[in-house]
Amino acid sequence: MSFSTSTKLELTKVHSTKRCCRIAELAALIFSCGTISILGRGQIKVSIATEHEQIAARITGIIKALYGILPVLKRSERTQPKRVTTFIVEFEPASKEGQLLFEIGLLNGSPEGYSLNTEIDYDVSLDWKCCKEAIIRGAFLGSGILSDPSKGYQLEFVLNNQSFAQYLCSKFIELELKAKLAERKENQIVYIKNIEDILEILIMAGAHSTTLEIENIRE
Image 1 (cartoon, rainbow, N blue to C red):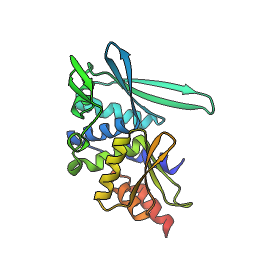
Image 2 (cartoon, helix red, strand yellow):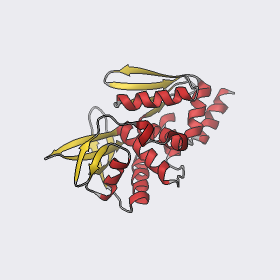
Image 3 (cartoon, rainbow, N blue to C red):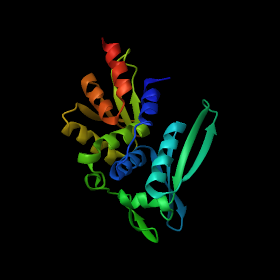
Image 4 (cartoon, rainbow, N blue to C red):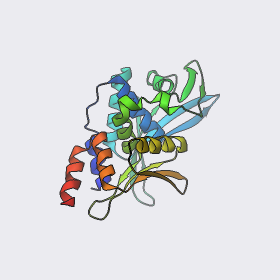
């Protein structure tokens, strides 16, 4: 199992009770690995895709805690170029859990009449001061890659949302962490190579066991 996977599995066990932090984590997941599909006649569908069943279960569990209903969970498999199973959580604005899309600023209006917000003010929609741990956790669950510390130190967030990548990088810099932003193919990469900064981010996200494991490797 890779360090990225073991870290993500650890983060799926972090307990969160505050409503705002649950919303922030889900928002970061949507901004990290969510897609918007146009269904026609102005209707849209939001999908959050992950290769980890535990992450999909966490997403559905948080949505149930927030809105009292489980969203649609689908399973997709492909065999080329290698076998990959993807778990997809789906919901639409008109659904009860679709309220989340208005709460995080992704949509304007109401389920009866809405429009897509292409310029989200993350400082307004995400309470960084209160919920930064939840935001970082959601971003890592959705897009994080952690290198094997026995081979080198690097933490990446591989994002296809440029504005969220800029937001995340700027917030790390505000914390005096040495985060940088780069492009790779069609993705925006927020990356950190300083080991102390990586450990601080992992601790904030809630990956304490991974942090201890890395510390033991360093000794």
